[in-house]
Length: 98
Image (cartoon, rainbow, N blue to C red; front, top):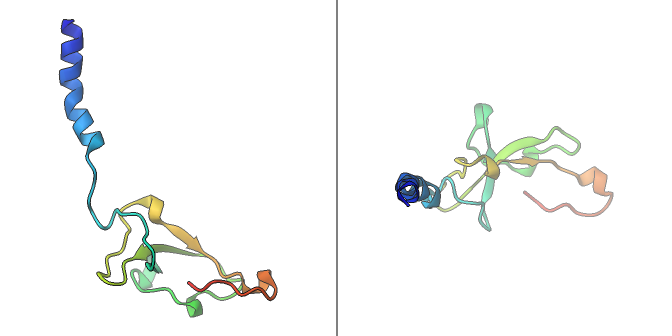
């Protein structure tokens, strides 16, 4: 019984850390109407437009950004995406804009 009590006491601080929810807007999942911004390089944090994505060009690494607060959701690697323009590949089907 003593071992169980000691185990529970030692585990409580860990449960608190694991169960705590991070309310950071930078860690939040992408939301509807977010914009994509460059994840790095000289244009880090700038909004990506269709002109930045040439058809058949290399993919761009991006993070979502809240257009109202301009907070980039870059505090979680799960929010990082690759953007690719597929206009030619789709052959007549209009691709969705960024």
